[in-house]
Amino acid sequence: MSEKQERRPDGAAFVIAAILAGIALVIIWQTMQMRVPPVQAKVGPTVFPYIVAGGLLVLAAGTVVSGLRRGFPARTPDRLAPIGWVVGGLVAQILLLSTAGFSIATGVLFALTAKGFGRGKLWQTIPIGVVFAFLIWFIFARGLQLSLPQGPIERLVSTGQF
Figure 1: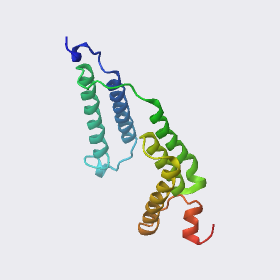
Figure 2: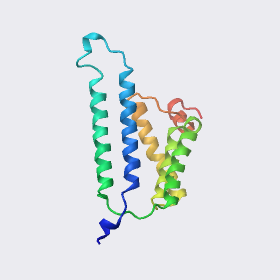
Figure 3: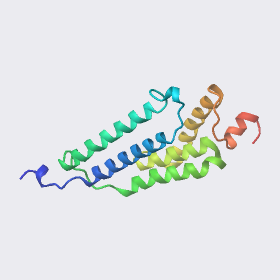
Figure 4: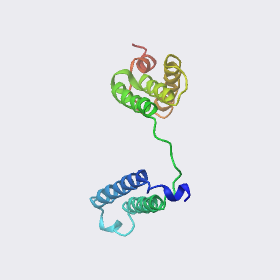
């Protein structure tokens, strides 16, 4: 018996299919809640969300079929430490955005994600991340006139005050 025949159906594929189907159902439900003027009843703002939801349902069904056929390659077990670094970076960014601002929060996210991928030391990657994030903030805030959360670095540039 080959390795492909010995393996069980892929449980992760079923979880992914369920998530895809769940997202599709939420899109369908939300689209059904939209009030559409009778003039736009045939082709209006609901057409595209229904197309996206239909595509997600097709992808969910295909994922289930591939999971049942054992069509996905065998994977090594997940290493939790790198996942923890990336998730920790996301949590840190969410917690820091309103106080430390976009540049510092996103710099920390950058550094912790890099650590999760095994790249660089935090004392090196945090400043690099802050510089890159500040450049992004500057482009969005000055060039595109979009509002991103400000912290001490951004306020210093915006108003000249700390």
